[in-house]
Length: 308
Image (cartoon, rainbow, N blue to C red; front, side, top):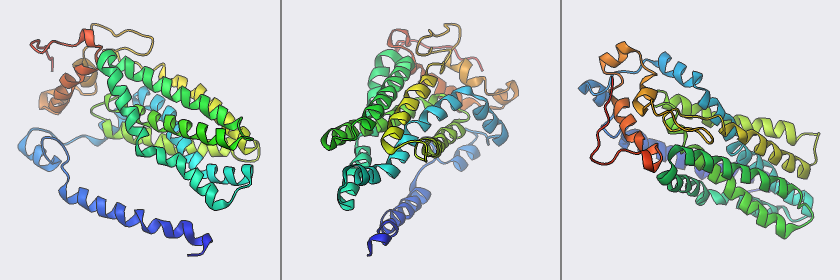
């Protein structure tokens, strides 16, 4: 079709695919390892959630907001770069718009492997250092992302260097996203959906903020890119206060008197525990002992007392 309609016509490919996959998930996917929600609740293995309590716990957990902000500076950066990178090549290097579009698409193509690579990297480090290792990986990758972003904006006169740095920068952006969601599931088992939703929304909000601040009339595009990188480096420091008492934080050791069960069951009242609402969370807490540093994990023959 005409060039000015191309961006509209391209939605005919992903649109039907999303609908098709959504139908597959609706009819063939399973809600939980133990079965669908309806079946598990009916069998008595799980009680119906109290929606307000679930939402309140997720909102009041400060870790949720630290990760939401930092996610805004990895996924938000991805969305921002998707919007500006092709016009940047077109304007800065005076190239054909089709070629600029292809080069800009290279930024998104890193999604084919880089987000998974971020998750794999954090899993490998966590195998030895537990959750503290995951936090260090997240901070290191995302800070590297910010530094490469600063460098990208300073290379506006060199096309080859810009392309090379952009590819490495994009890889770090996607890796930071994978590393972020390697931490998110452990913030709150009871309010996992709320936490995941807020963190994910932080990515979209971050893009809106970045574009409004750095890509309006106050900066040239190349200066906006570098300034955005500085913001990434600064805001990624919010990984530092993320602390899990049973595992520790980047610079803080764990509290030996607090267990995974203590942390996750704190979201429930004594009455809810007695009713069995927290039973599935107890199971998760036992599995979460794998997030301890390797030297502090229970041996296979050890049993850990659970207080409900």
